[in-house]
Length: 238
Image 1 (tube, one colour):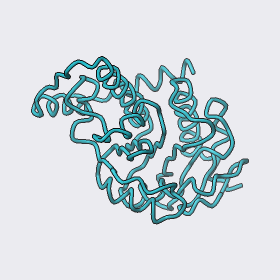
Image 2 (tube, helix red, strand yellow):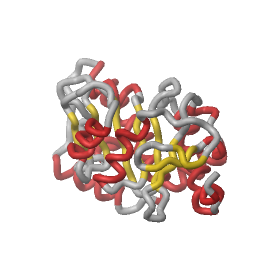
Image 3 (tube, one colour):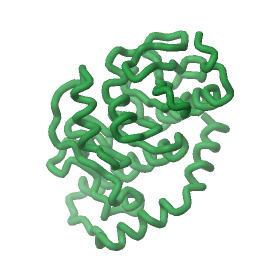
Image 4 (cartoon, helix red, strand yellow):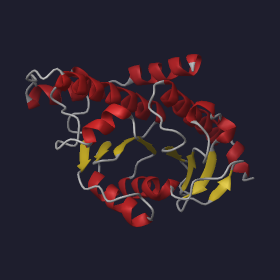
């Protein structure tokens, strides 16, 4: 096994990634043994940590996390990796420069990808406003990501966006830190849930102005201590 796998930096990242996966299961954001969270190891060697094939997110511990290269080849870890796991992730890490890439089919966000709007309306709830100006929409579903071409296509659609709504598919949430990424993932699903519930009433919706939504987004992004506190609270509980 690669000795880097047990280094202090990698061990801490493995623990954080396992926590994010277990928390996502606890919050109902997982789907069977599908989907992946990945984190780049910050050493410039193009290596990543990712969840293994065949394990429920609720059972994953730090020792289950696998180290891979950009092609998805296993470098260290006790479990196999799904062959397609890195097709989306590697392209976003590499082409978009994202350190953390969380891909889920979480229900309410995925439900919005099935609509003609394809995504969350960031002028509705306060929770949605934090994502104003941070979304990309890939409206063209192109089947399963079974090769690097599809991952690269998604990455080109994303460009510098933090979050992508993938039409008829799911979402991708990215950040430079896992605590920020998980916080965004959780609150994205909450905002999508609020919108789906509001739409289900059949009553007209009441959005705020673009200017107000942009102001709220800037307020949230200016101070992310709450994201770190949330992640640490999950560490104590999950």
